[in-house]
Length: 244
Image (cartoon, rainbow, N blue to C red; front, top):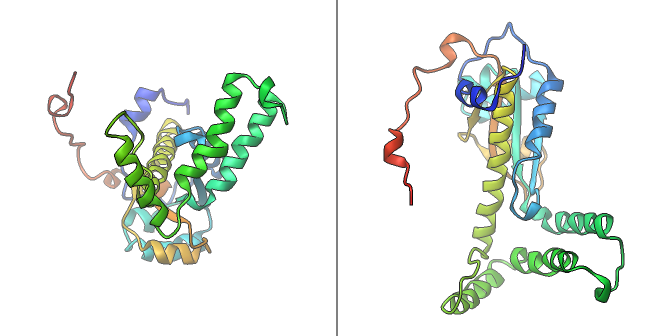
């Protein structure tokens, strides 16, 4: 089976609710699609995500009731749980700084640093901690009030509260999930993104830490004809497209 083009994959992808139990999927191909998902755009290159690839039938059978026994979960050959790890911002910032060491060299005096290096090191060493650090929401509101005042005089980034950064982390994790589903479609595999789940119980089942949050659970398999619930419906493009 040859891989589909991007346009072909976009048109082929549907949210499939029933998978064929007689057609298993290759775990290595799903893993490859997750590797491609890790190349998705991510805010500040922080990569505040983890992908839990569920291949155990026993675990799938435990997760399905936590997805309210949706057919997409019950008939899935495999599952992928996309997890947001905003709590790992310090670790991810350090990883970016370590990458700077490889790119520019380690322990360069500031007087010898190129402008690009100075910007990058200040970004991950100072701006990211300022943006992500919070203390029970208090520091976030102080930052927000400060930015409201500064924003009266010039454009400024305003999403600095804990709730704002949580949205940012979920948005970029969603980009990874979409990249994964398109990669799967290119392979001729099917998926269904499921938001309907008891995320607390799924977290407990997977032994996820307190700070982790489930973005979505994506079921995987090969569709049965009845697995696609009717023709695709979209609002007319002219209603949603605005050229400025």
